[in-house]
Length: 194
Image (cartoon, rainbow, N blue to C red; front, top):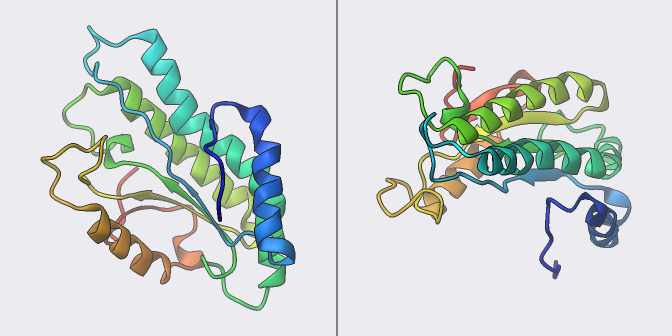
């Protein structure tokens, strides 16, 4: 689908995006929304955290997925109704919020990385709420940690390449059902602690 670049922080643009998506999906609705935009500032310690970076991380990593999910909700509900005879999952309708193990409060043994950790923990909480609120609509909502991946954000030392992480994510998402709704998972399907 040819689309122009979208500034996800400009919430006024979401109407145009929804119109473009609607033109493509027509009456079938939107089966899967991947909220994948992310921001991780370089300042990680309490002594170096900057207000602007903290706010940008919260907006990009938490607020954008919530607002984009809200904007796409009519299309997701349409897909769920169209596919009502299919079990809950990505073949019916799903919101996949790309999170991080760094958003796990229980797994945090190193401290630091305030903006990124905080924003991903908040995204996890929002996803859990979405899973409860949208259960009646048959829309699967999960958080996924893609692993440490060689990207601009992950850097060259990351052990996973994009292709491997993506392939494994697709494989597990195709298996997810209502039992996975509201969960926090790694790219290989391992359930992660909140």
